[in-house]
Length: 197
Image 1 (tube, rainbow, N blue to C red):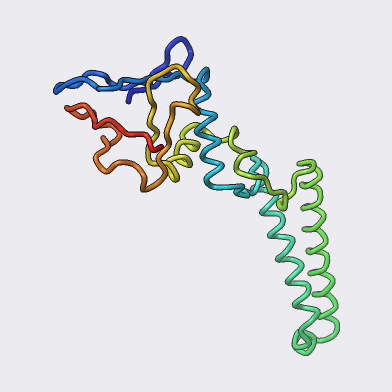
Image 2 (image 1 turned 60 degrees about the vertical axis):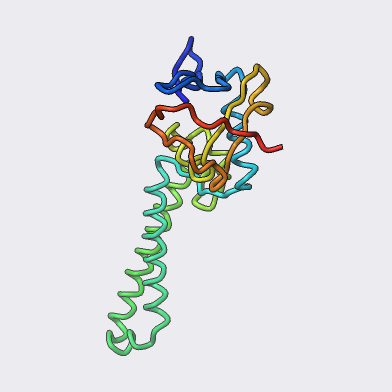
């Protein structure tokens, strides 16, 4: 199967001719007019279900750092005030000064975290979206990698019907064992694939 751009559309077609013969049932399909990409995407999501993924904005990394800093500062302040050994070791005056310093650090870190959350608007680390919602934000290569994690092969049958009517998708472990590997053109026409009824 080869893929190329024809008039701004993606066209997938079999090679038809091989050094040792011709394909017995040549087929091609164009996208987006056939709905191929949408059909494959919908079948993919029907197979994996609704997968949750944390939203990843460009600014989310800084927000996560600030959240960790605030948590560390809170934990340090809580540990100081909850462990009586610090009072014994430091003495009353040093203990009070340390508690004030740790509490101030925790409040400062919390304030900076809140300012960053306000700057980003409604987004928070707890906001969760589904993989389907984020699909269009992925690069094409990322979409293909996700599809390949579930799908072994896509067979196209001759005709002019929509993709859903003339495409068969083989999930992992379902593709024929003698199927040509990607990137290597076989010398003989591949064995015709019999569509499961």
